[in-house]
Length: 228
Image 1 (cartoon, rainbow, N blue to C red):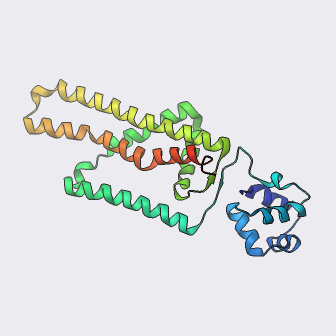
Image 2: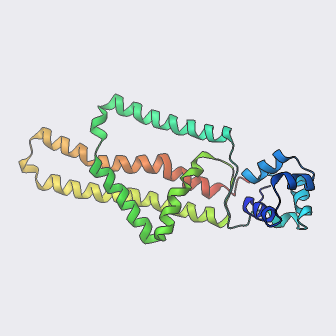
């Protein structure tokens, strides 16, 4: 089960106990106490031992429905990091094989899509919601999450950002298409094709951010409690 690491640390500090003291009075090892305070995972026996020390029920130490409790392990972090590297490498390989990387670099398109998502998120979820979407990117590197209402909130937030990304890209494509078609008489065939290709870059950035980062996070938070 998952214990609230915040509750455990608060209770220990309120009693003026170090991890070593808590380990001694609970009959557990210092390493066990350190691990539980780090990732919240505890066996039923360890939970009962700690709860009895503080004269609480084991349920009182568990993470509440509002908290996000995560198990961080080096193996899990490395596994998810390698997966992200594989995705990035696959995309980079396709870009390299398809054309020169310079064709995919457009600062104006990147800035536009980022600012669009930033503004839309703040309008919908407020400044705090936007900063939560940034700080919660760390959850890409773990699989074991107990989230409750906070996880549901982040799932909805990230799903909204997927919509904003593609919505912003669609608007960018429309504006670009109108600009290109409105000046078609002034273009040579090569220039027309080049302008059309550049117009697709905003959609490329939107898809890259959405499918490689934002949507996986949304699904992870949406299903985290189902997997427990």
